[in-house]
Length: 220
Image (cartoon, rainbow, N blue to C red):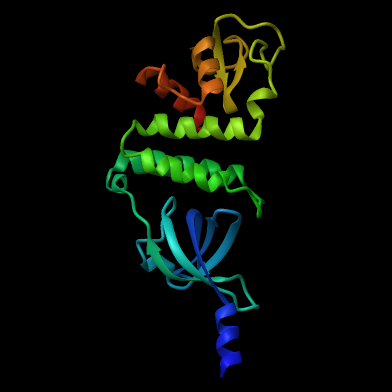
């Protein structure tokens, strides 16, 4: 009996994570992609569509049951909720970022705790600040962490490779170009440079944040 109990315990593990994506299968069941502190895992949930807790962007506490035959099953789900989840605009912006992050981390299994901590940071301050500011700063922090902001010279157009003036067109992933080279939002170069160097948007107006948002949603 003791051996049987010990084996049963080995087949279950407790975790916290953010739901990055869900896919419906077999009527009411779901296939979930969940970001935990050190990995991305795919889990199966029976009758998942019946549970409002299981939604993209939600932070949850859950058990994993490993059965050795199919992908692990998600059990005993508890939502770790935030006050802003009752506000449509904040939820919409948050889910947009989650969708972008899911695409960015496609085909990745193991990862650093940075990504989980980034979501924790954003989720905790989302109720206090403009939601677009929060997720844009999250995106910039991600670029800084991955070193992608240093791969392109901020004084050179990424299209024609000629020197830029003060006004630039802002491309996907915060790449700089001449307004004549791409059809994109025109911004002041020094303001975007300050954002990318500091990870803070405090110097930007709400109108400028909306301009950046229009570019940001194209992809990380």
